[in-house]
Amino acid sequence: MAHPGRKNLSPELLTGNLRKTVFFLALPVLGEQVLNFLVGFYDVYLAGHLAADIRTDATAAVGVAAYVGWLASMLFAVVGNGTTALISRAWGAGDHAQANRVANRSVLLSIVSGLVFMSLIVPFAPWLVRFMGLQGNAAEIAVRYLRVDAFGLIFASVSLVLAAAFRGSGDMKTPMLVFGSISILNVIVSTAFVNGTPFNPALGVDGIVYGTLVARVCGGLFILFLFARGRNGLSLRIEQLRLRGETVRRILAIGIPSAVEGFVMWVGHALFLRVISEIGPTTFAAHIIGVRVEAITYLPAVAYGAAAATMVGQSLGADNRKRALKAGYEAALQCSILGVFITLWFTLGAEWIYTMMHEDLAVREIGIPAFRIVGLFQIPLILAIVFFAATRGAGETKFPLYVALITTYLVRVPLGYYFGVHLKMGLMGAWVGMNADMFVRGVIATWRYSSRRWLSTQV
Image (tube, rainbow, N blue to C red; front, side):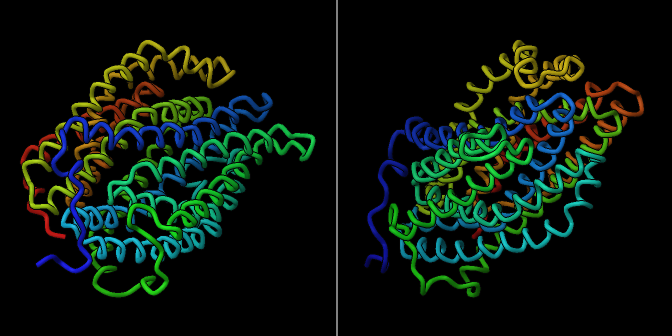
């Protein structure tokens, strides 16, 4: 007898050609990531082209704010990762009714998560900025940015969690539509606020955050509207909006380790920023540009990681472990091919990248040689992102937490301080720690995936 609420399984995901399925699952997410990347990238670009007396402080402030936004997204993974794992398992088993219950519980949890984050950021923004090494005008800019953006992060939480829900059901196009719209809107509105138009005065550096705020709010409302109308079998049900029960417990049980991992990594990266700040403000600006551009590597890695997570979850839900295992390997292979081209671009195009991103010669002179070396470590970074995303799709979230503790606090921060500050090697030395972190993380993630232990994870 068929399970109540179950429908026919998706033949494309569960029985179609694996290579094509992974590629076409990843493609919409890649488009979404490319457009979403423009938000942070363009904000740093705008900051680097403000007036000469403020551009370095503005670049540092926008970079610190981006780190806080990254922290928010990782904490929102408390809900997001649990949502993807449970919906993909239910979808693979054909239990669409359970998948919809998870989606509705997750929406309410996402709103609560956003409100909690805002309530913490607004009062603690000055302390957070000081902790990350900013002082003076750069600190003042960053505090204003964080307090304004805190409201927008409520809507960002909803967007991220509903995107995770849609991906769990195999719908990669809806998140692309939403985040693509957010990215384009951010570029348009931020430019108008920074430079001014016949309809509004020029706000300078503050215009960057107001553009981001408008984009986040509109994106959250847009994806809620689509969910209310119903997309790919998932739809808003008021009676299912609850904060208690077994479904909520399962979401949090999977997601909390991911959030702890994110927080652990973020604190380590914040400490790493302190290391960079001790070297000097020009080096700090060069570092911010480097990490924002390096985020390009995350575009295909996150896309293929999302595809792997969906394939792994649905395949395990359909009790097909062999296909689940092959899905992660295929995603890593396809993404690594793109990684080769990224490596070549970073190593050979570092001078062009820094010349485009910042007008100060001192920032370019520091950043260019160090960024060429960073380019050589993009393949390990890709393997770490894709393989750990795949195991999270199976519900394994504790092991990546342990790896984050090791690579962040025993590799990145101490090596960065030793070479960058103690040996006075500057940014090149500090990035020894960052490069070593990426390499070790990639090796461990590959080993863990190949061990197949994650295939037995219970959700």
